[in-house]
Amino acid sequence: MINYKNNELLRFTTAGSVDDGKSTLIGRMLYDSKSIFEDQLEAVKKSSEYKGLDYVDLSLLTDGLKAEREQSITMDVAYRYFSTPKRKFMIADTPGQIQYTRNMVTGASTANLAVILVDARHGIVEQTCRHSLIASLLKISHIVLCINKMDLVGYSKDVYEKIVEDYKKFATKLEVRDIQFIPISALMGDNVVDRSGNMDWYEGSTLLYLLENVHIASDNNHIDCRFPVQFVIRPQSDLNHDYRGYAGRVASGVFMPGDEVSVLPSGFTSKIKSIDTFEGPVSEAFAPMSVTLRLEDEIDISRGDMIVRVHNQPESGQDIDVIICWLSNHSMNPSAKYLLMHTTKEVKAIIKEINYKFDINTLHRIEDDKEIKMNDIARIKLRTTQPLFYDSYKKNRNTGSLILIDEATKVTVAAGMII
Image (tube, rainbow, N blue to C red; front, side, top):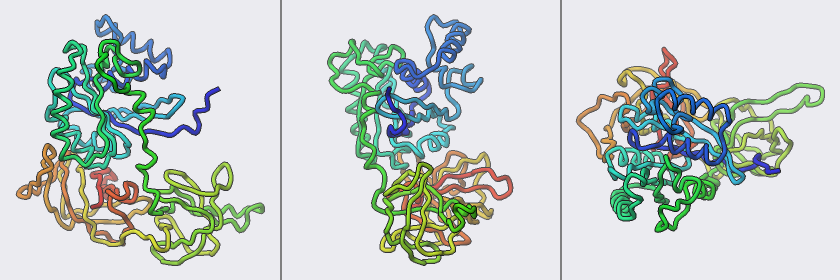
């Protein structure tokens, strides 16, 4: 029997223009890898018949909203999970329209890899550049450019190579270390799960093989030890009367019993006595493990504090430079107060300064327009009521990210990356 329990999880997002075939591609992957239930397939078959199609529209597997099914487009971020003997996958299917840029940011914020689709008939278009720049901005390490609908251009090698050449020229402005290219037909299944017999000239891997084998372990920061405390465990039972543990998820680095650590903001130091999990004690903990740390000394520690190495500590401050994506329907109000969530810490904050907005198609600065509206990406300075302990987003995605929440409505209005 195959054991899927300990398989590594790959989070990836799909992006592209409207009708480039993102949902069809995911549906094809789920179908060809036998990762859907019979009742799901039956429902999609009925929906396809209802629409008058003479084939099974696999895109309906991910277009969950009624409005999406009616229009055959993706409006919200649709998450899907499946697994193979080699790896587990979490997919974020993001919309292609310009007005849903914030959904692309949401779906890509936790992704290891971005699959960007290009229609072989149209080549590189504005949305291709937009989504690639967002992926670069969010420090996604791997981009796979899938040239889709190759069946509609006669599986032409020349068309494929022209698009690859054009994208490589554009990609010189991206901060992405790994870019791969695959010619596919999501509708027909060419090079998605199985190799295509129609493109013998292509010698690379299929999309699923690449997703199963791409190396992501080194994407995590294993150097800077950061452990935001989420909860203090005090059972106070007869069996564990003196037990005091600090539960949370390792943001980065590797912790081991005997390590000398410092607790922020107090600055008190101690050593790790043990590392406990639901299954029992472990000899080391690393991202993204959820564990409970026990220290040799009794220190006043609460939710929002951070346990770090003595000689490797994060930045600290109340004036924070951030690149934000504005998510709210209402424009940013510089005079308003917001709740700021950073790791497990919640503080109040104000917009101290708006530096500039980005032209998301080029990442050029727009300095003469300071009105921040929905889907805008801008650089701002925040002032918090208490110091934050943080790293730059480029260095550590977990301790370098934050969200802003409207204090009155409790609605999340912005997602931010600390510079």
